Length: 409
Image 1 (cartoon, rainbow, N blue to C red):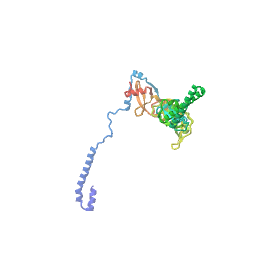
Image 2 (image 1 turned 180 degrees about the horizontal axis):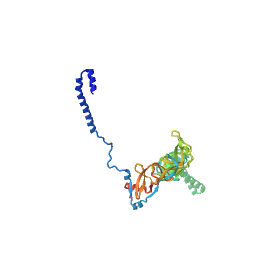
Image 3 (image 1 turned 180 degrees about the vertical axis):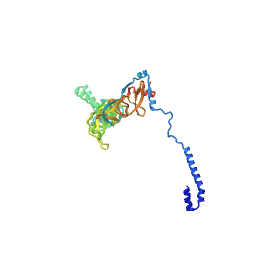
Image 4 (image 1 turned 90 degrees about the vertical axis):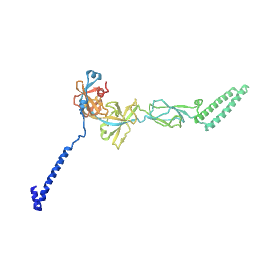
């Protein structure tokens, strides 16, 4: 600082000005450093979150039971082990109706439908009467209904007069019994023709009576197979023409599962003969059914780069519906080693997390979080493995889960 002051003196010659300003400069630096020190003391760091009374998860998931409670819950344990598990591929699939098992029912003749209202989704059995069709009486005269009735009435009157005349002549023995009998038979035919024409007239005007039904043909429209009504094209009291579609029924006793497989995986599953089918959202190994590969018309989706495989599955209990999405597991051939436990050992929490109970000490069970990769023939393969030879509850795990959360007895 002195050297700097001498330099200024040599340049300006006003050393008294430098001496006057030097104390002010020192005081300013002192004040600034004091302010910085004060502000540093006032700054307090606040934590972004505060947890009161923290407890480890392991301390919350340990259950200690008495021997009597263990027997009542029926707990059984097994040890985790490394197994050679077959390689699989899990895909989504879709339930579809079997081609050829959907039948369209049509009206055999022109007539009027009778019966209860039919809706899509209704289940019917083979031979069950779905509609009753009252056939339209034949019009052989070419006349309208009213004109035909009038003609038939006149014909009946003529035949009646003929019968009356032959009856009087027969009394006088001036005609034979044979002519009288023929006239009486003609009278019956005329009467029947009149009643049929009247029934047709009432049919067209929707004024049928009980006396008209014997003169009309009634046909039962039956379900050709057991299944589900898919579409309905007619309703009761509707006049339909011969050949008009009435309804479609699809058999769901056997359904197909369509499985789109990515082209890169197709070669590894092309020879698969069976598939494991499971409804979406079910627990591990729950509701699984086996389906057999079938030869179906080749279909593919170029945009998804996938080819469809088809499998036939029994559905006599109607557990699956057409269009339903399912999970499909296919064998890819070969095997790989992995830590496995029985699928029954896995329990689910409300958020879908997977857990098992490990016997850590006598009568003491600890709930462990696991991550299940897949299930193969009742064995769950773990991605996040437990220690080898750990004792896991595989019978009564659900009861333990209920005991822990207050639902058990």
